[in-house]
Amino acid sequence: MIYVRCPGGGGPVAVGALAARVAEAVLGSRGVGAGGRRTVGAGAVPDARGARTKARPALADLVAALRGTAGRRPVLLLLDDADAVRTECAGLVQRLLMDAPGVRVLVTCRQALGLGEERVLRLTPLAPDAAVELFLARARDAAPGFRAAGAEAAAVARICRVLEGVPLAVELAAGQLDAEPSARALADRLEQGQCWLAAPGPALRRHRSLRSAVGAAYLLCERPERAVWSRSSVFEGAFTEPTAAYLCAGAGVAPHQVSACLARLAAAGVLDTLDEPGGLRPPRYRMTRAARDFGTERLRAAGEFEVAVERHVLHHRRLAEVAEHLWYAGDQRQAAGLVRDNAADLTALVEYASRPEAPAAQVTAALATVADLWFWWTVHDHGEEGRAHLARLLPRATADDHLTARARWLAAWLHAPGDPATARALLGQVWPVAVLAGDDALIGWVAHVQGVLAWERGDARTAAECFRQAADTVPAFAPGGPAPAVSLAALAVAQARTSPGAAGRSARRAMASPGVRDDAWATALARYARAYTDHHQGHTARAWHRAHRTLATLDTRVPLPGTPDAPDIPAVRASLHRLLADIESPRTPRATVPAPRTDTPMPSRTSSRAQG
Image (cartoon, rainbow, N blue to C red; front, top):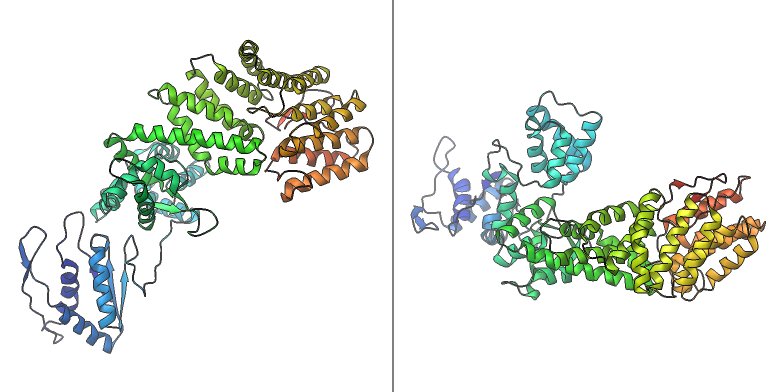
């Protein structure tokens, strides 16, 4: 094997410098000496600054020497760290493979050379267990007394997860243990950023800090690629090419250039490609954490951070509007999938709007986004996250307008199962705004939350009255909250114990409500209500079959005839499983009504549980 470290290291590289270094390694070993070797002389060539240096031997001599050596024994030429001379490396390797076929060349580089016979082995990040093992091995050198047990072991796993298994980052982080009070403190600091990691030990200068390592890749990029890199750093999660083109175009970068820049950044390892190119879905990209931290630094230094955040907020505000329209158009699975794919950036939107320096327009956009995604928080069991977002945004909403009232109503619904006092206080602020505005939908939704509160405290009669008011007040097809069929389903459940006949009629009304066939969630709740009322009326077999058919629809995602394609509705599925368990056992049936959580017990003698 012949080992050659390629020239580079941050400064300019002379044309032909790589060939000169390879020739020195190959031909220098053939000089006259104890082994009878000879040294090939050389003239002089200018370096990148015009100075004269020792010239490289003729390329023909190099090829002849390699051909002769390869004729006697296998030759492996290792060209290490070829990023700075990648173009010359590709040409040199192509020439060697053509004129000296017995030679095999191994090149380490951030990007493939692009040669026809090239076989590329991409080094992936360490697996979680391997990353932890590497961290502990380096931690014993940095802090001999460190022991990873209990909470410290969990913190080490979190450190490796935050660092995404990058070996250099893991080693640098382990070296910081002697300067941090605990592994948990180190993990908390790494959650805020990673580019500060540094150590004096590594021989290569760029390996002495994570910022230098990432910066070395940044220096190899062209100007448009650098701009796309820094501007894309505002994305917290995955993003598509059209989204990146909207956010990154401008100031020297044309929209049509963004796609090529993304491809080159992905080839350099700055971006991860999450979908196969040419697949059914357009490719999505995700920036590695260290690259994102570095890009954010460069974005702030260029004075473009606020502009990028403004575009990010505007884009995801529109995305939330699209998701809400899909929900009411009957494409509820697609609406949920759109939110799920962009969940990280929707959270980032709230974080950007929660900054003290964020303008009022960003706060308004974030609050409207959270309110429009009510179905994600309530139907898809993300209530804790929704509450946290509203708790950050509502104190910054100074105007007592309709949007703020909607957000407070949503917060009340999310608080109702576990914090009724806060829910009642919020509803007290929403009610006068809704009445003065003449907003029947909001008035009805307030009544629905009041019904949930009554159900939580065991007052089924009051709950039924509130759900009836909600069903009668909310207009059909009103966007922004649950349809009347949802309140009718809750009404049927609340009536089942005291008025089974009325409960059956309410369940049938829910199934016949306008638009219910395009609302998979309302349809599933109405079918659950009918199964529950059937069971309570003694029609056990019919209740069992109805519950099983509805559960099959949710579990297999195969719609029943005349029903929409159901999204993932974990709360309704859990309710149906409990109902089936009640049917198949002698226990007293436990009723459920639409509320954002499933783990809050109803304080009543019937051991009922409130949920959605």
